[in-house]
Length: 75
Image (cartoon, rainbow, N blue to C red; front, side, top):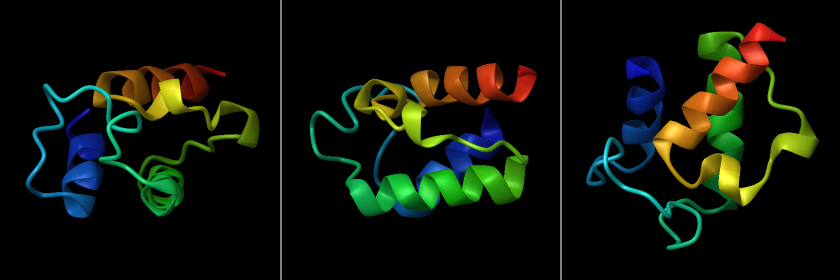
């Protein structure tokens, strides 16, 4: 999870991603941020996020994104 938090902080260092929810819903993350996250997760964590998983609820918190990464990493 620390690696994921580092990726998120590189985009928005002022946000507390450990506690913040509603990242997409509240406009903290935009579409370009999501593309960057997908790319960084692929490169740094060797986890591919398929198009059908690019849903707001999967990116609305660090916990939701981590759950997605773990689920895809096990597949």
